[in-house]
Length: 326
Image (cartoon, rainbow, N blue to C red; front, side, top):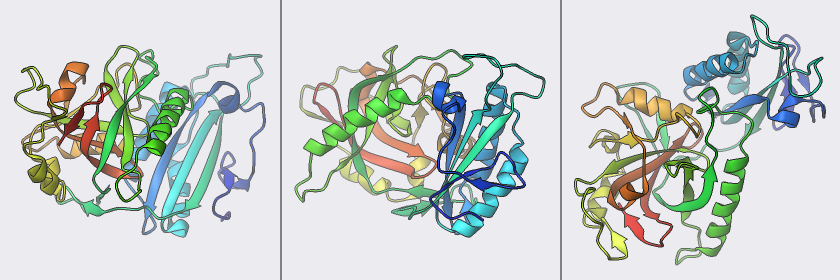
């Protein structure tokens, strides 16, 4: 087993080798020709390993890559057992091609891959852990925080690429830089940064996801009414809602919506977990576009990803400067 915090090349599955860098001819570096997935590990177990496995299968098919997903998953579980707690990051790129430039030779089983793994010891921090539907697995939950709408935008993609966690994440990179700039200038009274995520729209104007996460939201019954002119909106039930965020019933009370990944964004693992877990409840998740006119009428909002789990929000600052409180 290779040391933690180093990259390991798994392309030869029977003989993983440590490698500090990939070749400059690597197509992931040259063309972002590949995808990745990031997994949290707690008590030697990969959180939602079956969903990450499905990502390997679906993405390899979409990008025409020949990937032995079952063999990869077996290796990942071995690394997770040794790691105990931390993060596994898996990067898959198309192997170098004989054809010059962007092209590659398609085949029935797909192109040969380069598979890279980084195992990092870290604390997968959680404020709580929620279990749904009597499932032995749990969802990490972070402390309540706040979010802000960003001016950065996501690219709209063709159907064959929309929703994939491809290696081309430049729009998220620029958005994250914008968020960091905002956080650097906004402090709570005790000097700690309070904003934890930014909400992003795509080039069509629909609000799609966070800089590193998917978004779920609820709407008040008054969403069709003109928003009030006061600076703080939807604050009547703030104390009640904050209390609700402290237990798993938060997910099963009221109708949750999540943005469509049909033309932009990443269809995240935790997003799918929550959709599946709530599919048999009174309020299954509805996939629905989130538009400017909806923002003043948000009554609940949280972000989520596979590493951090659920990140509940207490407010969202709009581009206008208005604050919608939950």
